[in-house]
Length: 95
Image (cartoon, rainbow, N blue to C red; front, side, top):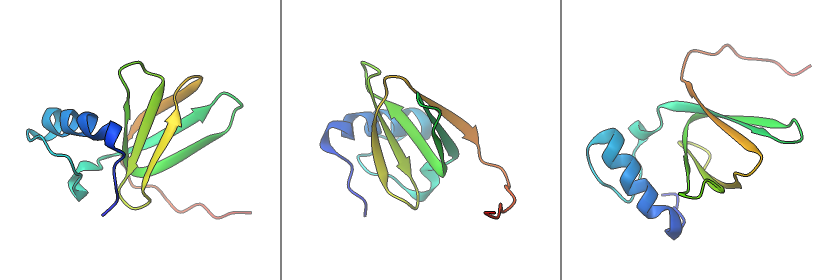
């Protein structure tokens, strides 16, 4: 089981209560219903499938929770986070 940083437990409890009707301090496979696109101020970006993000109250930090690749914590200043609907995406080959 992946470990959630202690300072994010209250946010997870609120997220699971709001979205799934039960307050939990852990995540289940069904909790990862989105893709998350992150755009950084230098033009870089990344995307996680089957994930979601939460901003802290001050909106200065973000936590991205992925079903298969762990949990990531970011400085949210000058960074854009987007939830995207999970759809069938075709495979892209690197050139």
